[in-house]
Image (cartoon, rainbow, N blue to C red; front, side):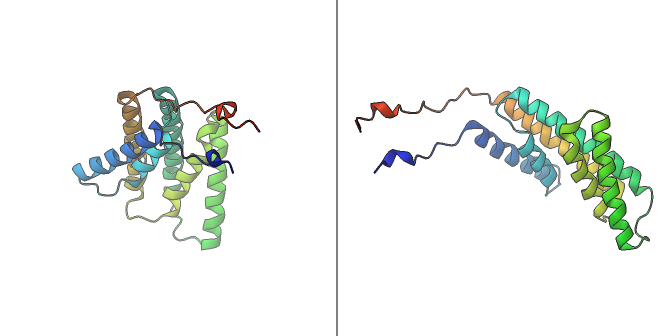
Length: 175
């Protein structure tokens, strides 16, 4: 029986940095009196990558997606959809998502397209009291999470490598 087949690798730095980013976002939210910065945490989780460069690129894609989705959602919110039949609302929101995706293709921001659609949907489909403030808050919260992720990646840049895998020919098993 080969007992070396199942080994658990220690957590890598990206795991540690992601957890740290979430904690920082939550603490910053508490400091400024904003107790649930969930979108900042989500942005930090999605933007945290192994290197500063890839985190920055991922953060820019996330920010672009959030801004495009937020701006297009605000444009739709100028038209009050609350008086429209729910089935027609559903069709219009679906068309808005398709338009959001297409807009990202037109501006050559394909990596941000899916997120733009998600942000558009979150803003348009939810019915908070102040939709414009809600949209602006989503964008600012996402920006905060991205900045936390980039900051953590900039200041915690410990080169860490997993130990090399053992060569199976050196395990003494001649079979």
